[in-house]
Image 1 (cartoon, rainbow, N blue to C red):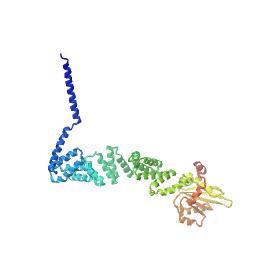
Image 2: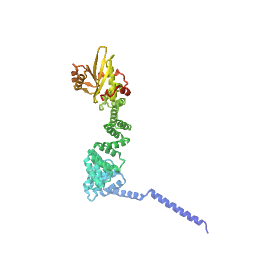
Image 3: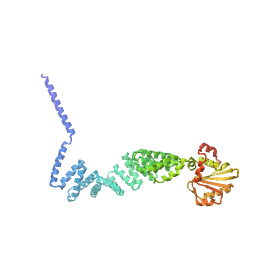
Image 4: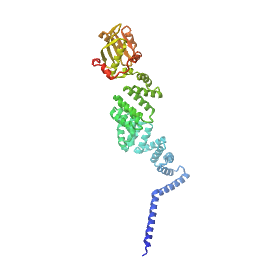
Length: 465
């Protein structure tokens, strides 16, 4: 038996397999080869007809559909534009399809007026098309016609109730119209379908904030503080809510987190820094606040009351006693006032008899003062208010002097006295000291007032408790 025969058969089979594999590979690489050739042939036929009649509706419709399927939007738009003008002359043409695809191509190349014309014409023919209603709604939204947006998108929602972009845009349109409850309903549904939509989540937070559900709003804004796009605004809202709830330390954390973002919009940057300065002032961090305010002033000297705050608090930043007088705790304030009493009359023996509070408005200190030439009972009134001190407060001091049988009254404020208050004291034994006289007085006494010293100097009896 010839032994070469099996080898020959094997080689023939092997060659056949290789040929089949190559054919399959070629077909896989170009599965639409026949389709491409058919399209090329169709285009040749269409162009031949258009060469004879450039406004041949059937040829134009075929050409437009080819470009449309190839996603050659610019070419398709130009072709549909001709058909848009011809459609009324040929009743047999599919006007609805032409209008819709004309509008869609216009959208793709950014011709929004043409897109509106196309979809609007389509809508006059059929109001039950989801595609038409949705795109009309979106175009109205782009033009800020939010009432019309809601009309069209409500129709689209009836045809597809689970379409997230429709629900989203409905919610955003209601938000623009300040109909926050309606907006919340649609945005929540859209977020169930598209949970990564940070812009809608932010708007949902604003809706909660506007309707007074601040805790839900705070949770959303706190979550979004680290988001690259919505972070700065979210941090501002979170800080604003915390400030309103007197959680100043948390507000500072919010504002600082917002300022860590890059490329912050100038308006948001200014507001974050301004609010951080205000929060720092509430925490008596005067130096930090003044530094921030000066940065804002260097960029925009007219921003809010920055200039006034700098003038007001820069002095506090360099005068610790003035800072204690205006902003410190009641204990430290009383301790400082006692020091003023002890140092008010030089070379005297001073004994404090009592310290009386009037709520949070002022304190009265009654002291026996003895010098080489005289001795008397003097009543000091210390007022922390920075505003204008009127006649009523001075009259009240005069009445208390009579009750206590004190020989003289000294009224000290960080603000200023009104003309009526000044006239009342002209013929009475009451001295008025405003900020101009108070500052040098504060500078002349010991600037270090510790909590332990304050506790030692101030008793419950002193505080009138």
